[in-house]
Image 1 (cartoon, rainbow, N blue to C red):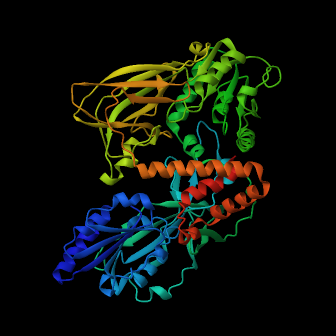
Image 2 (cartoon, rainbow, N blue to C red):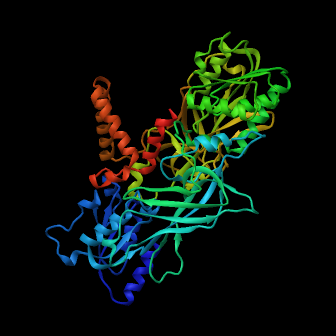
Image 3 (cartoon, rainbow, N blue to C red):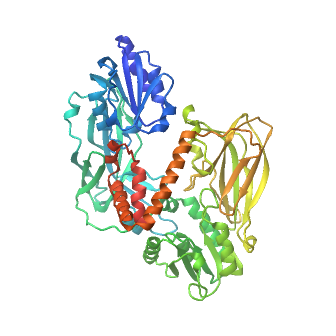
Length: 624
């Protein structure tokens, strides 16, 4: 938007006036900046995000949506309707390839713009560097087995939040897209090249397992400084070398990297680990708190038998082993995680640890556990606190496999909350902010205003308090309001008590593997020094909030709701067909794999698929 304003000032100086075309996937703010330009005779927003962006078009801006290949001048339009200025929003450049920015620019210049339009940005470059992404060890536990064999991925991904990312050389440019070039039509869509990076560190080889890359855009010819967009990562076969030759390949809708030298040993990957496991293992505060909790529990229970519900990669079991537990049995439902935990146990010499591929609710006393356990450790807390079943599972443990004198780590869970106003990035998007359920939100990275101080919601005693079955609860809380504003959400988080004076909180701003849970509520005006009655409820597995006064109006888009209902109906019919027709089921599987392999090529068919979603889907074949 700032570049649009600078361009407008320069065009004013030369008395240029003509139509502008904005292409993108954003919230309409760039189109609004173009509409404010004095040299914009008319503004068209070509949205690649689908029908919902109809509401994001600013007043006075003509909206077109759908596949860019379907965008042509209308029969009633003449050459004077062609755009003098073509603006490509920055969201198109974060991947550079999956968003098909080159094809988008070529089509718009050929069919919707004057022969030599002003293109903003005029230049986009892709820069990359080799890197080592690793899970930091904790308390002597080595996770290299995890990094070497389970970190791989099919597509570029966002840079991890909490893990160690070491750049091993300076960034180099892979390729450049000159979007204002006269010969843009002749430039090849598919291309590849190689770059050499020296990695030697005092004569010692360096370990490489990733490429970090980003797009650098130069908005205008006269701009001295380019803008670097967000960094992403693509994982490689791990090698050790003092220099690497890296090959990049740009296909029509996919970007990939591979090592040419040294040539890695080819391997067949059969399993992967969900990405949130890496951030969880890299959360030093979380790990230290659970270590303190285990240390406190084991201090008064010599030769204790420990059971670990939802053992995952095994870290908490390893900590119990190293703190002196006589035996540790971990229960995990994902077979690949059980195999990984066993390999990590062998690598870290945690000989007293046993991992079972079994739902903990199916444990058999005398077979899976020789005696009842002295300590239960479990990290089964999602950002909403209760979503992974901590309450019913703790009660199950007390009923079946814990001694009466056992300790539970953590000992308790407290849910806290705050009333907030979440800023909407564009007024037209406000109907899409409402959701009947909570979702994950990193409040520290979202524009907001706190309208209350944090307050307690529910406290759960995971120890003796859950010897009885947990029951649903509801309560009305008169929340003291600390600032004037419009409340539209309740943000809540958990606080775990691990040991005396040791708590672990997922509060906003915490450097944690958890985000917060956000429960939207209808807009309601509040005033400082007043109270807002909120009804809090939990069903033992999730917590929800609601206003007592039904008068506030819900924000939702009827068209969006109708689209949602239509998708539900289609999904039900598809599920029924796949359940009773094996041929259709195989056709569906083949189609889904085809989409996961190359999502970008479906965009010209009117099916824009988010590459990140395709990656998560493809990875699900390996993490189940």
